[in-house]
Length: 362
Image 1 (cartoon, rainbow, N blue to C red):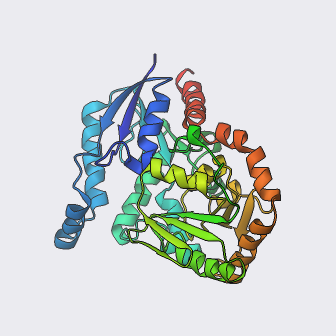
Image 2 (image 1 turned 60 degrees about the horizontal axis):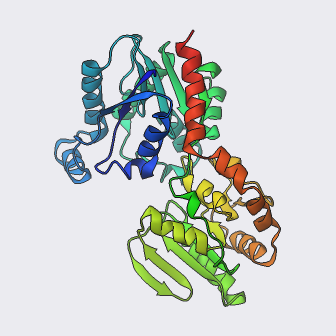
Image 3 (image 1 turned 60 degrees about the vertical axis):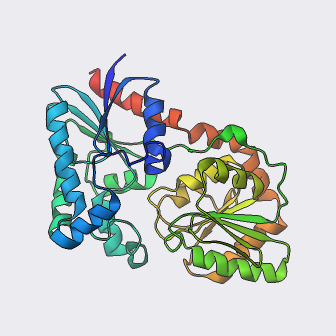
């Protein structure tokens, strides 16, 4: 079995690292490769100390992390190794570098210049000036390295890279992502047709306030509707709105089963695994017409796309449409198998393997 070096910035908990993505992809790739885990994450400073370092020494932790990853790469990677990685911190003409990403700094810079609303939430807000220039240069050098390739989680990012001519089309491939909750636990028997679900720790970035505002207006007309919110720390129930706090994957699964519709018109979303989780559990989705969301959600087929990010009336109309018609709900339920086949980690791993084999067996 071919050896693959998994150069991963694991978080403190491997199970939940990158919302389960790091471990899910590691396990999926292990079916096709002899995967060697090269851990470049758990030795990082915990977030509090990273922030302290930034405040006291004016050194952005991203830069020190990159330096640490390069140090590990120099020690552990050899000529003609096949390296699977999540940052551009290490690359070399000596070995094959396959990068899996949902965001790149070139895309972040583009969003900052073209979408003032999303730029507040797109991530890495502390990265500016000389550091941003350095990170953009690192990416450009990676793009130009002859043995470097990119796997994108989203079609949105792939299209951006190609349209902006940042990398040759044959060196970037969309491979997607997979759900991190147990699809075998699907059970919609308790659904009432009147429950909405929102999932997201970053309540403002996910456009939570407008969801709450719109729901209150919907409830004035449909008194028995409910909204379940997972993610924000506070827990309370108020007028049909259930703030559930932060839940485990298993606990979240029970609400994908209980609820009927998923609503999260996010202001900035690198990909949106939660949308494919919702679709895989048969939930029509209301999203925003930006980023990867239009690739996942099709108007009047499996949900609706909010055109005006802060239009309460538009969101109310979409929520009410879902309540009074079963067409979209039936469409999603009929397509569940397709969503599950398309959006799972084994499918992503097979797409990755196809490209790696094509490159390394030449």
